[in-house]
Image (cartoon, rainbow, N blue to C red; front, side, top):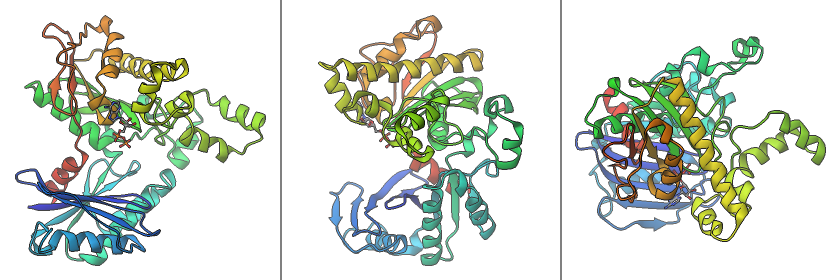
Length: 394
Ligand code: ADP
């Protein structure tokens, strides 16, 4: 069956039409500048991208345009909307309510709304996408796939913060974690590449993109992850600080005469390798600058060191690790980062093979045959995971 996968942002919308039997992408594309002017890039499989700039006042119009592209006599990939069996929506925050994907009902929409408080920028955009699809395709089953759901198996010792317990009880302040669809896909794929079952392995997934998170997946279940109540915690990211001493917030606010919101904005948008290097949030730019710029070189070291520290922590959390998988923009493409991070892991008996590590964006075992821990490069595929979860439910 054909599944339309929708990933909605506040002013953008990514889509893929996936045949769930063959797992082939029939077409994919992106709507940008929704509510501003509008730009649509549509790409049928095996054909060139088609770029247009139709007016896109809101998400409903954007999705209407996507449906027109998908059924277009020339550039379309299906004859009519009857050939689409279901829609899978990426939803960022499902709180504690959603431990797996689910069919979208009015009740589910209310529950997602209740999670808006945790992801005020992302969840309302997901809901706009859901409501727009409901309006345009009222009889089609729709499924919500949550970034947080895979992490709901974490034990209390991993998800509780050491602050007064009443804040967890009253407001749900705890670790939720994100990128769950990616961690789920990559951990399962890593096991498959190794010819083993996830239930037999302790795996650490390093999702290293602009946003970055690690997860400890023990016997197929997530037991810890580095992002927290929000996607700010954990690793050093493109523009996000990751972990820091919480007292820094008040200190900077006082020194610079800023409000708490202004400091939060700095931690989310002006920190990470961008803030540290002063060069860019794009790791490729920072790498290029690092050749003759010590500050940029330091920024990369801080990033890689933090990843290595988290791997150590998760090896301890699981009392061992069988496989470490690198994924997302940096993890899939940057062999130098993978090599430097792996150098910290000698004590685990992990040995990277420089030749095998010379890969970009493909499934590969990159450790030596005698490495005690398997190191892997595994391109993530969140859209496919959303299509799989959707097909399974409808
Ligand atoms: P997100 O989905 O969080 O926006 P991605 O997973 O797309 O992020 O990753 C984007 C990041 O991947 C960018 O910062 C980019 O620098 C990095 N990246 C992509 N290709 C390479 C490469 N060849 N070497 C180093 N970094 C890369």
